[in-house]
Length: 136
Image (cartoon, rainbow, N blue to C red; front, top):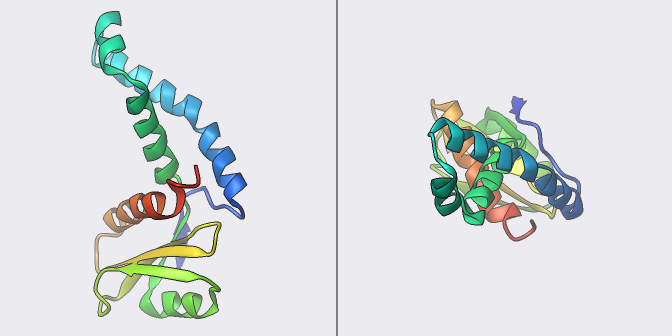
């Protein structure tokens, strides 16, 4: 078993604080991408809305969530010791699992066979949508 990512939270308040902290980075990323796409001031003003920056913030936050990657047995052992609800997506007869526990007694997991990077990215999006969107 191994972990990938940076963010893990003991509380909803800590998640909210970190979400706030990635806001300036998201704004910078959006501004630099718009510059690389050669937006002039008018086009920047028309196309780079608060929703665009918020989407960048959501994606940045989600992409940095720490997730565990392991075998089905390692996941089952963790799940047996976890005192909370776990939402699992995927097929039960798959050998590997990726999972993330949120700060409020809920976790999400997804099974996968091969494509670890794709499974991690998918799980992070699921974790954001199911565990963090309403918190932050």
